[in-house]
Length: 79
Image (cartoon, rainbow, N blue to C red; front, side, top):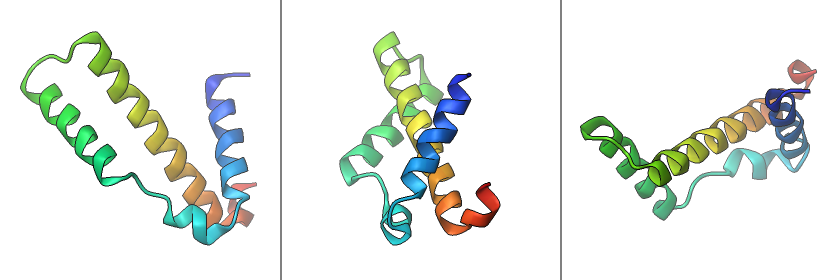
């Protein structure tokens, strides 16, 4: 099993919840602002190790939620 299988399983679990709630998932304003700041800083200069780790986590979570939303929209295609 790879980490990608784990992400797929977690996305499937999230997608199995109420589809309207899954599709409504979004980052808080504070999280979105932090993500935008980290992205901008990464373009302008180097992030320190903690910031890079934080940005990586945001990216993984965003992809996971995106995958769950896709599966929630079309569960017959997710199989």
